[in-house]
Image (cartoon, rainbow, N blue to C red; front, side):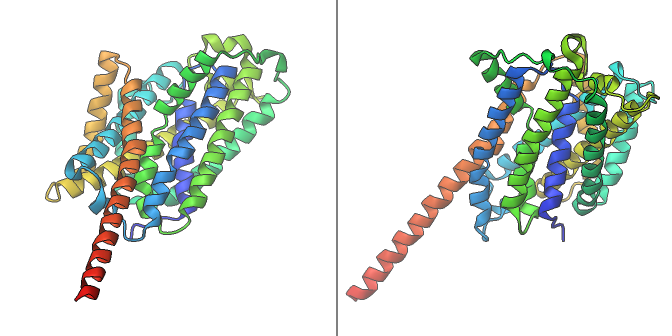
Length: 349
């Protein structure tokens, strides 16, 4: 059985979100905080059709996914693309932040090998590890908060926010919320507690996003504008100990979150590829190679695929679930009408 618990789903999704936060290059401000809150509220509403679908015990994503094989192909393509984004984030961070391995490419190869091995153990093994990751996230944030408290300056926070800037930040946050698509597929593996785990995730997501933003704003101030990665800069300025060693903790967190994120993408893409091509061998390895190749192409060309990812997320996590709900309602109404017609005909006889 590949079933996972609701709390494990929560841990996996929070870990993926935290990785996106760490890799963000955008400076935090009032517009970004408000936009993120609006984006998360929209995402929470967008998840309702998913929960409606999975409330029906007869629903099977493998059997009932819209567009059939083409629909599955779109999801597999998205997971490969998001895995490529994760590797690209790894390469970008290692260029600006100290990493024990000098070559970004070698680091990506080593981490991809770890991810392939972890993915080969299955989704249950990965979900068990997510509990440890959640603890590491909480511990790291506590260390950062302890270090940030005496150095924080509320004067750095400016409440000025323009509507256009808020909407732009909201759209950008949505385009970086690939965990919505992962959630839709992972819910298939959660037999009970779906609603509680999803509600807990969005609650934790907004708390996590806003806490990190407040730390970055109050600690860094104007320095954030010239920082490549505000999270790591905030961590460097928020040392709770006299000896500067907390940076290593954040790098460990970043590395393990990268492994968790990429492993999740490999597992999901491999699962779908296996349904499309059941005879294909080495599906896990093929998924990892495709992610690395796509990441190398993205880095080489320097193209920004934020809009593309946003379109994918909107289609796969919002439009398709809503379409599935509508289609099932139409089918149920047809069955009801046919049953009523048959009953009426039998009575006339």
